[in-house]
Amino acid sequence: MSSTAALMPLAARGARPLAGRVRVPGDKSISHRALILGALAVGRTTVTGLLEGEDVLATAQAMRLLGATVTRTGPGAWTVEGVGVGGFAAPPETLDFGNSGTGCRLVMGAVAGSPVTAMFDGDASLRRRPMRRILDPILKMGATVVQSTEGDRLPVMLAGARDPLPIEYTTPVPSAQVKSAVLLAGLSAPGHTVVIESEATRDHTEKMLAHFGADVTVVPDGPHGRRITLVGQPELHGADVVVPADPSSAAFPLVAALLVPGSDVILDNVMTNPLRTGLITTLREMGASIEEVARREDGGEAMADLRVRASDLVGVEVPPDRAPAMIDEYPVLAVAAAFATGRTVMRGLKELRVKESDRLAATADLLRVNGVTVTIDGDDMIVEGLGAGRGLPPGGGLVASHMDHRIAMSALVMGLASEKPVSVDDAAFIATSFPGFVETMRGLGADIG
Image 1: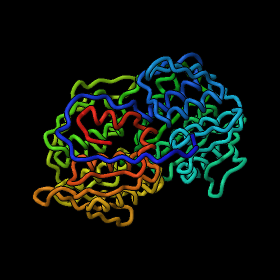
Image 2: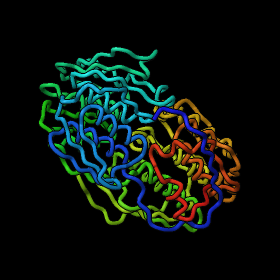
Image 3: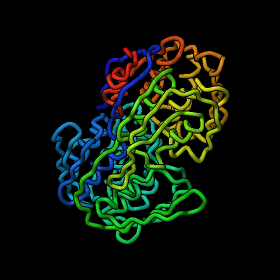
């Protein structure tokens, strides 16, 4: 998982109108959580629509090494025989999460509530990402860092608590990963574990904990925040989980359909949880034609089919409090902004600096190398759009992916509508979140190769 591989350069060039109906891979956040909670439950969990990308497969392997039985029964179909809350076994080898920050951080929380010791590691990109924000609260709950790299970066050896303590924890930054790690550790603690967040972040962990039988209460806290209370030491039971299509993956064909003239695309079964749809909200403010049809719900998660038609976009100002609902989508939003009329200002993007790459800098570089004027002002990004008479973005650039799947896909989307093809130095990491991306886009009519 952490081994190096040959570079996989790709280029995208101006396409005929995109058309067709596709289902992008299952939601990555739901897929990780289904495997972890299935492993912490008693009995069998069945999962359909699981994202079979490298990130999620790393979490599946980690659950096996921690003692759960995890079996693939068909495309996207998996079963998990759980070990119960606090029932993890000491893994016989390192838990290698490859490029997956979500898998690594959530499993740290789950291990923190079990009396086992585990070594956590990942690829070169994941080794650069901060783990202190996860370690701070779980150490308060009784876990111990036995070994770590300078700055509390991977590899980290973590000893879970024999007698976990419940805590009340206010997250220092809006982070669903931090919140989820605390709640997962809190499953093994007596009493109430409480997480307070000043900005509401994606709530998949709370919804799925309830789906597996935990007692979770969520109430407002302040103008934008929430207070989440978990009653500890539940007996989670195996459950059926239907994984909707990932809105973060849907973002790429969605934006491509908006930018390529004449396009008309339907994206099936996309999650429409309001804490994940900041991109759709923003694009609609910019004038995008995005229609929700066949709305439905499963396991507490809303979903719908999205019909997307090519649209003339205008620049907008994106408020900082929207960032948690679209933190992974800013690179492709920046690409959309390059084609819009006028200026787009995206505020409050500090979290982009600690993603798979410094995603804020990488996004700016992506645009600049393709002839778009972009400014970074503190934690804000300002894109000068080239729409309405100013022509298309020139394109023609070679984009450095920085081992970041979302930068690579955003660059390829840009190439489909710019004057000249756009190339990316390495598209191999796209498989971490969107296996089959190139084939999916080609199926809609995209010229990528």
